[in-house]
Image 1 (cartoon, each protein chain N blue to C red):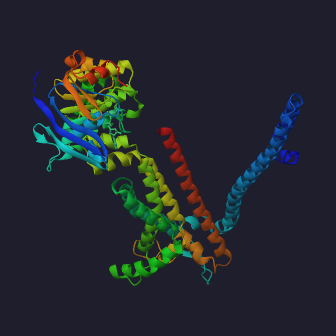
Image 2: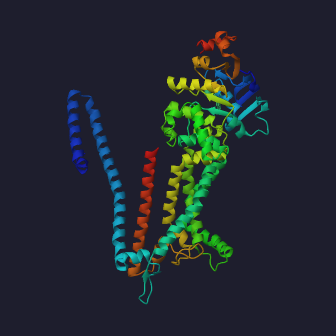
Image 3: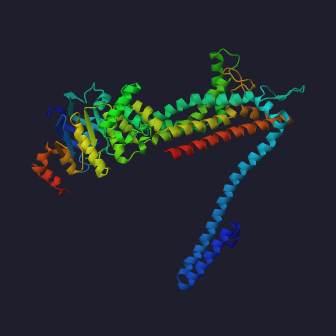
Length: 330
Length: 253
Ligand SMILES: Nc1ncnc2c1ncn2[C@@H]1O[C@H](COP(=O)(O)OP(=O)(O)OP(=O)(O)O)[C@@H](O)[C@H]1O
Ligand SMILES: [Mg+2]
């Protein structure tokens, strides 16, 4: 017992001591209490052990985040220093493996691609996901909704490489033919794949939010002569807006971090993005080039990782701020 | 005061799946009067009220037979537009349920739903409705604040204003004062009495004094049946049915 108490520091030790004194005092007064006390001692040890385990687990998680951040910063900074922050972030040419010594390390096209791709996926995925959520939460009858929910969960469980594969086999030929292009690998294809991938989380988060809208609001609206659809869009959805916004932010987070699926459909040429050209995302640059990159190129990929990391931190901070604001607001 | 019948139910039966909640109810409700529905808990008062604006349609497994006529039209007829019906027969619920929007938007919700646009028009409707609901002075400086910041009594009057804003003919009130303090309650009672020159009011109440104070007619329900119906004064002074007498004198189990 004392061993763990010292591990937990002074407070634990003081507590353990005072408990010991307390138990000794009580034992002296009343004999039968002794046995109960001795069992409590065992329990105390268990409590202390378990608390220590929890603390250690918590520290491990925090530790990993710290290690990853520090590692990214340390390994991401050299290339930025070498290339120059401005050239790196605002340069429009990405030619890191140029053999004739004219290598260029501008990631602006990828930054734009990641932003466009994410926005496009949100633009397509959120309305569809939201309508699905309204359908599941309000319109569909119970059994149909249950079946569809299962399917949506299944969609969430499909590995991203499978999305990529299906996109490659089905979507790319369609785009190639539909737009009469030499190849279907385009930003457009990536946006569609991303939109489908973020659907499940958007649906389930918005549905939860819509389910939480008190029935009284909807009854009040119906009793005023609004139709059911008017009620869902003008009363239920606004009442669920914070949850729906959370769904959007979650979707942004997922879309911006995805690499595997879009690596297979985006064409992977670091063009300034336009809908029907091949593009390279921040994530796909890392995933696609790490295997053969040498020296500065490799370091530049770490720098991209750092940029991506900051992006995602920013989004998380926005989400937290937003959720906190909403809690205070309501 | 006219005695024109505005709503008439005939042989109304209602089942919630197997539960026979209304049994052969026939009642004629006169226009521009206040009709109180009384009876012990679970006797079907709310159920009856909700058949009048077809809010029962929303409950799965409901079956209704018999007829209800509103101005001579069968409200369960095949060509009836339920949204039009509900616009004309408004409802105020037991628990105040303002939308989580501004006070203004709460009141303007109904008119907007029914196609009224234009700020000037809506402003006028909002002010008139809030005045009619005797809450204008309390909220006129905070129309753009959330309705959820109002007190319970104010919220309920806001809900009345919201119902009035679509210019209904009939207002159904389901124990609309049961959660309120005496002052708010008497405000809403006064309101109901003022409104009856222009509207027909049907109110469910558990409060006998309230029925006596406010209503012109009283209907006593028991176990889904309409036991006795007549002028309030007569019902409370000379009840004809033993069960009515037991109930209003508080001898009912
Ligand atoms: N949505 C529903 N589904 C199934 N049964 C219901 C439903 N609403 C009411 N009932 C049943 O119908 C009967 C009448 O209920 P109702 O709510 O009309 O009573 P009430 O007179 O309004 O009672 P209270 O004074 O407690 O409000 C009750 O037996 C009740 O259990
Ligand atoms: Mg009731």
